[in-house]
Length: 100
Image 1: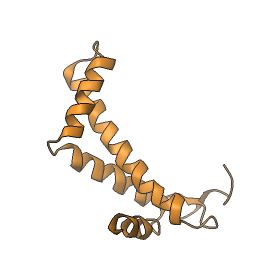
Image 2 (image 1 turned 30 degrees about the vertical axis):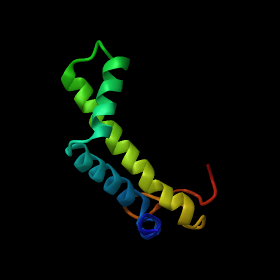
Image 3 (image 1 turned 135 degrees about the vertical axis):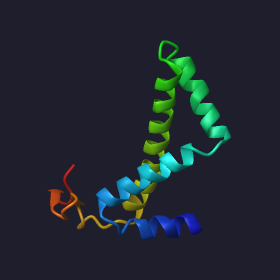
Image 4 (image 1 turned 90 degrees about the vertical axis):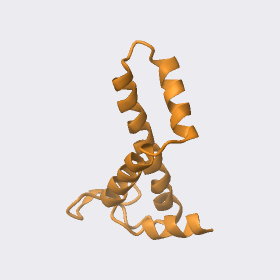
C-alpha cells in the first residue's frame, strides 16, 4: 500500500524529473551490497565473458539505474493522466497526449 502511494505521488512529477530520480536511486541502490547485485554480476559474467570486470561493473550499475527508473515510471502508467502527455525539462511537450 505504501509503495502504491509513493508511485501515485511520484506520478505527479514532470517525466524528466521522475526519470532522473529513478536513475539516481538506482545508482544509490547499486552501491549497497545485496543478493540482486550478485545475481546481476553472475548473469553479466555468463552473458559477456569477453568484457572486463570494470565493463561488467558499469553494465551492472546501468541495469540497476534502468530497472529502478522503469519501476518509478509505472506510477505514471498506472496513475498519471493521459492529458498530461510527456514534457521535456522546460515543461514543453515532447509529443501530443495520447500519441505513441
